[in-house]
Length: 58
Image (cartoon, rainbow, N blue to C red; front, side, top):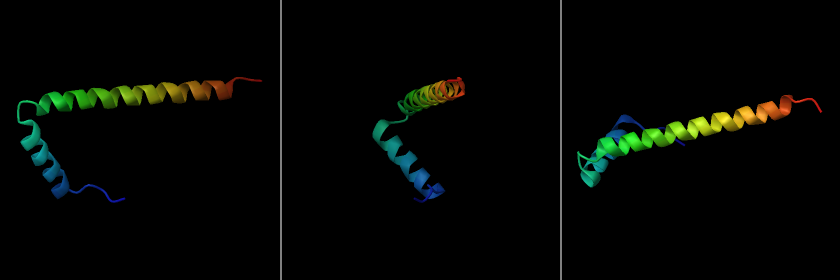
């Protein structure tokens, strides 16, 4: 897989601006950021639970 370049990123942002409009974009970005933050937090908790289970003596 290739990385997203500057031109592709600009194209996606302009397309999103045309579809959603300038008033909705900050709201969409905020909710997307919240979702990513919650996902990272959940994955950290799962990793922590797995490592705690492995460290317990049998």
